[in-house]
Length: 81
Image 1 (cartoon, helix red, strand yellow):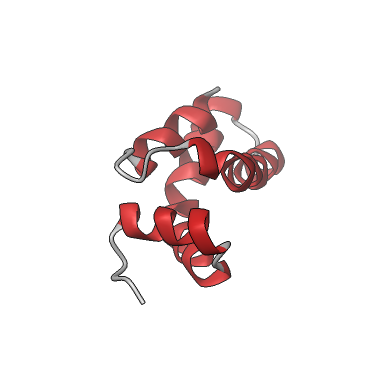
Image 2 (cartoon, rainbow, N blue to C red):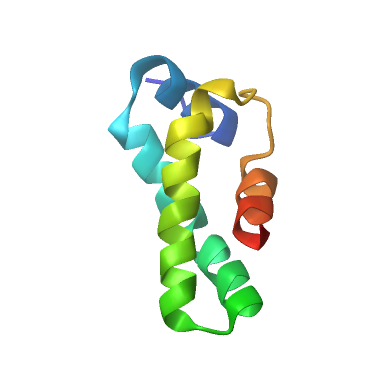
């Protein structure tokens, strides 16, 4: 099993559909995504929905991302958009 560096976690998810790797990314970044969404929406309910949507999009687009991509940056940008 690879270490828990973001690029390794993304690669593990891309190659093996690893639930453990994806769950680790969610645990690591959900707070930041939620806080970003809350600042942008001003609504707890909308921020929760945005957070779920961002991780849904990550799960669907992960294969197209470089393992060297800044996951935090990508998630932040997705939350803003």
